[in-house]
Amino acid sequence: MTREPVTLFADQTLREAISLLNSRKIDGLPVISTDRHVIGMLTKSGLMNSFAEGISPDTPVADVMNTSVLTIGPDESISDAWKMPAERLPVTDSEGSLIGILTRTDILHSYFYCLAQLQETIHTAETLSIILESAYEGIAVIDASGTIREINKAYCRFIGKKREEAIGKHVTEVIDNTRLHIVSATGIEERGYIQHIQGQDMVVHRIPIRKDGEIVGAIGMLIFEGVTELYNILGRMQELSRQVADSSLITPKPNEINQHFERILGNSESIVFVKKIAKKAAATPSTVLITGESGTGKELFAEAIHHLSPFADGPFISVNCAAIPENLLEAELFGYEEGSFTGARKGGKPGKFELAHRGTLFLDEIGDMPMLMQAKILRALQERAVERVGGVTKQQVDVRIIAATNKNLEDMVKKGTFREDLYYRLNIIRLNLPPLRERRKDIPILITHHLTSFCEQFGLPPKFMLAEALHILSEYRWPGNIRELINTVEMLVSLTENQEITAADLPVHFRAPLSDSLTLQDAGRIGNKESILTEMKEMVSRNEKEAILKALSESNGNKAAAARMLGIQRSTLYEKLKKYHIS
Image 1 (tube, rainbow, N blue to C red):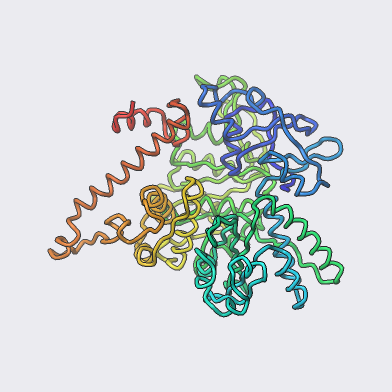
Image 2 (cartoon, rainbow, N blue to C red):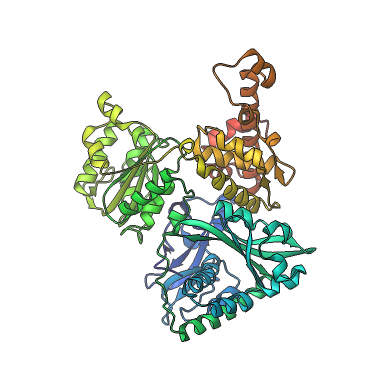
């Protein structure tokens, strides 16, 4: 379970709730009383429904929270937890006080952790045999080349082959529709996938095997009866754990790799180096400055640093300094008192610094902050205190600052557009994220991961990219970096009809990149720049229109709610509705 989870109080507003949900990247929050008893649950879907019905973001949480909440005790089994119909289970002690949150993902992770723990404690062929023949109904192990090195009797019976007929052969020659060799090549695990084997749809897990940081193979696990079989597996794993303990085998320390850093995909030297520095930086309270081109994943690094830092139990609050109008930025950062300006809400409002107390404040696009605000930010960092707009007293704040920018702050300091004293206050630990064109080794890993993710998200059958298409995308310069890659993969998943994505499915600008020195022969072969730019613009417009229609559908036609879902102003949405003739 997640201990000491983020919580809400009944009198907090929906605006504050959605800020917490977005900053922590979670789907629900328990609502507690002053004595930490669980009195309700608020989810993102519940919030979206409320906004669609026109409920104000300043409405108290108590008005919309779900009061029928299932809870579980810390000593109950994860098998019992799995049977309970709830995606997020509050864990309460004997007095009913909240001590943690257990999610469906936590339950599955605990199960797979048991497996990994057993793998590390196996030292004898006898114990390995027990695992192969009773841990799962079917297990196949391949090496880095895709050759089968081990397969148990249950798997052999199911595919109708003898063990000696399978060992030593490439996995594609033995198992129908397998992707085990792909997992071994990319290092990206695939859990709970449906695979058509011997005329049947089966639940499978495919997990890469690593040794000293290198991928040396993969394990394929075949589950015959879905969730029902999971209960049996859990029971067998518990029994095997007792057997291992009885054999006096050494229990390894728990895996201490931070899950948020695991979300930063890639094995290239440049990204591995930056992750190493980031993990060291996370262990200190020092200010971190993250630089790099747009779309390189600066916020993802900021979140990972926060969750591995001494401030991990506090909130992660993100502010885009370029997205907030200059006249509102001060009130957004420092808050305001009641009556400080026309429209100020009753009781005032805390700013981002206050909300981030004992947590992390991420100042994104710091290079776009106006000079006047730079001075006020510097004062807040030096004094570790803030004063609300219209206020007369200062409030101490304990906040870890992470700033990010895609601009050259050194040049801005020379030109006088960025304060030198603030620059040195921020530039204590520097992380420069490499652009995607400098880590081409990671491109296939990122593409494969997001292909799988979007297919699952959209409820589509798995799609695969053929080698030629993957090669073309690996050679592309990706000026928009990872953000452009993700958008491209989403477009391909949405528009490609077949399961296999070929080079012909790629937009023209990938298959024939623009060049300032096109020859007449080139122009005749791929068309002129104007036609390519036209195609690109049409593709962007098509995707934008589809996103707007989807948001309107999910918000039941509520344009204010749709604008919030799209992350744009309502006036901007109306302009786009007019542009695309959407009524």
